[in-house]
Image (cartoon, rainbow, N blue to C red; front, side, top):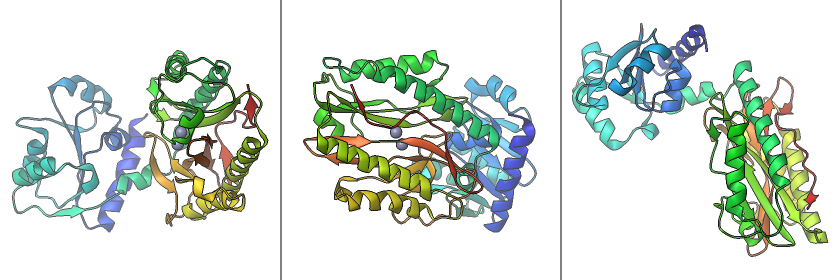
Length: 360
Ligand code: ZN
Ligand code: ZN
């Protein structure tokens, strides 16, 4: 990414800080540091100051930090990262905003101790997350590419689903095939859950072998150019009984209703409600035990969240998952998940793999 992209993002952070009457922002969450600087090291803090941006890291990342964020003021840690940042803040005499949910108590105490009693601290959640919720065209392109890889691998791995295959073997195929197609990794550990285990929304793949006449839920995602995708399909091994077809159609209709509701100016909770109402009308409301979707980007779960009580107004440029599901204990589960972009006047699906019920 070009330097001016980061400069623009940092200017937006400074504008948000002025509204919160703070002079500087301490950034401790690594995806946020990457978003503002391009620094990919796995240890560091960032301080957005009025006239400069200071990146704190340690000797292991000196060369990398110089290469990735040469324009930043680089400071190598001495006693410890938090103490180094605290001492810097004390010298700069700034009022500092920080994000409590992204700071351990030990780090916070060390930074505060080193900064001394004169520094004013202001808790401020979500400044960078609000910026990250609106994706640039380049970010959308990366998620779209990650979604394409996820769709290709899903298509290939569904062809491997048959009685006798272990969930773990399919999960291994997913990881391998994602990387072979250029992913740097998986957005999360793939879920392959068959039979009664498919009723666990976040099942970990097990030694269990897939049996005949079972539902199988596959949930996977690729990381490409640092951006995540997230995709779920549910298949049936054998000829699906009428009730499974009925359940599947209800989830499919809930998915379509949520996609229809997804547009700028709508509250996030309205998209959730659209999906939930369809399942309720089909008598399945009590089996839908999670939210309808979540934002995704540099992280697999980020703003905005599409759930009950989420009053955030959706804006063009957000990328979210749409993933209604039902989970019937002892029987099985069905989930259909796609990634979608909020456009100027509606929404567009970024993952386009077919979503009709496959009977294998
Ligand atoms: Zn998923
Ligand atoms: Zn998801």
